[in-house]
View (cartoon, rainbow, N blue to C red):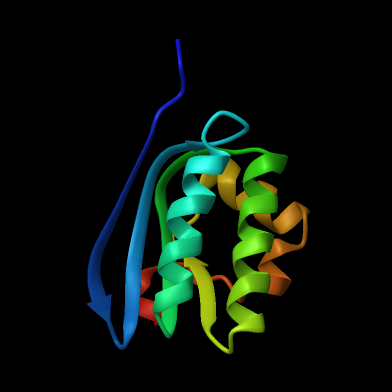
Length: 110
């Protein structure tokens, strides 16, 4: 069974474009997530990835986040994540991504 990921641009919160991803960010979905994120980060001043409905993230997913952060910084834009919980939050903190991304517990912290 193929893994699926659902993405949507939802709303603006305190000047941030909220980009939501649902499902798994792994080797089978990483390219799709990156392509969408690259386009969004490339055109928006401040983007937050709402990960509250992401159930799993692999090293391929971590690489996507790093590439998007690098792109945003290179272009003078902001990129962060919010809402990561459970195993996703554990993976992000264990890999020290929380120190790079300035993670927010929820969108309310924007």
